[in-house]
Image (tube, rainbow, N blue to C red; front, side, top):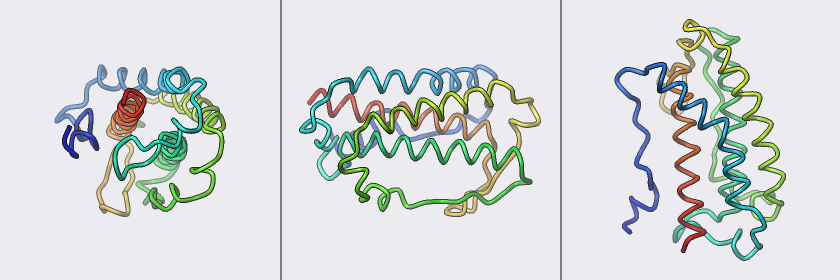
Length: 174
């Protein structure tokens, strides 16, 4: 498998030209089911498996799980900021620097999975209640200076979930 396929096993994120209610419903479903899928996939993994990179030069299984938890926590905050502020500029973070921290190299993945479960439950609860006007609320990402609406954000984090799930499956099958 070439490097691009290893990095993007489900392809790169692409925003549909028109985001439909079906797209949103599917994204919410993915976000709702994702923590349980991660829990089942990683149940009883030993440290030697958790500390194996998903590809050469890539993060380990443990780092991926901690990253997903932190990233989706940021997602939850981004939704809340966009819902409570007028087109805010959200806070970016350096995910590679986060991945170098002690918790990413040695903390139990159960902590991040439990965190992911709580964050996803709260996020799905909010997403299920949004009006069309709320879905169209926006924020600015400081790294790209691009405006994004909440429909796009939901699809992006649904993709992000499946993107890293594929990384984990690849790591555990090799």
